[in-house]
Amino acid sequence: MPSHLSALTTVSLPRLAVLVGKGGVGRSTMAAAMGLVASRRGHRCLIVEVSANPVIPGIFGVAGLGYRPAACVPNLWTHRVGWEDALREYGLMKLKVRALYRLVFENPFMRRLMPAIPGISEILVIGKILHSVTDGLPGIGVPDIVILDAPATGHGISLLTAPSVVESSVPSGPMADDAKKLRSMLLDRTFTRFHIVTTPEEMPVAESEELFEEFSTRQGFPMGQILVNQVRERILRPAQREQLATALRRIQGSQAACADVSGALFMADRAEVQRAHIQRLRNRVPLPLIELPDAAGGRSIRERVEVLASHLDAHLWREAR
Image 1 (spheres, rainbow, N blue to C red):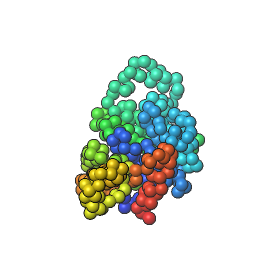
Image 2 (image 1 turned 120 degrees about the vertical axis):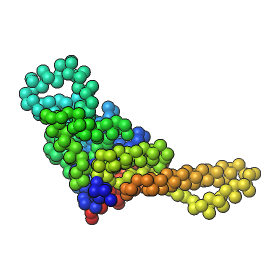
Image 3 (image 1 turned 120 degrees about the horizontal axis):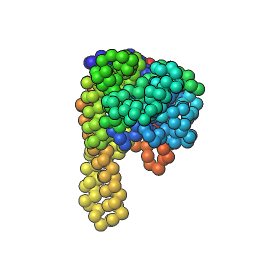
Image 4 (image 1 turned 90 degrees about the vertical axis):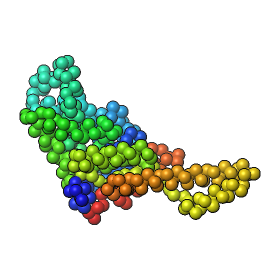
């Protein structure tokens, strides 16, 4: 087994947990659930979002404060990191003098130039996130764990591989030194763990395989479990399904009965399709897999998060116990 796949046996709680996956698979609700698990175990946890429209504050019914951390529940905070805020903090740390920072970074030419340089905006964001892990944030100090709700597949890859891009394109200087440091932190199995979030459907599973190939095989990042969201319970065994199908052919005269049996068969078929996708993941991606229930069913988003947290608590970050 490659060394970066042995992380699960060496540490239980990482300093940084990164959630990656296709858009629409529930990364944000999973991040909120993981945050609840950590906070309820007494760990101080920060959830970081990078999207323009954060959703974590709304899940917990609090007002988002942008770059400033907002308290969600005891031991749990969240904030958003954008490249402009990260640039401001990075510039002030490096240049020390606020007036000099404004001269260099806030003139119109530099503001147009910075996002155009490959990897710069992304490395500023990932640098700020990792700085929060090691140095903490004003008002909350150093968290025990930071959970990064990374962007969807393409943008997520750009963000998380930015240190290697900058390291290969900038030969020397402060930015190159920072890129090397950031990449070493992402590669440290005692510090970082990457979790792939997916649903048991064709496209999300295919993208999960691609993410594993990119992050584990090419980048060598330390991987955690695959979190399979929205798994339907298997309600019928194959023999029972066949019995219902036979019954359906015999009760064509009763419209209500046909509808009930057809509905049961449809749900059973969907569950079987999901099982096939999950088995494909097990066959092609050599990582532990946690199946999480389809927690919708009329529940509010907060209630769904509570359900996911109760299931995650039985499996997550208990490897070394």
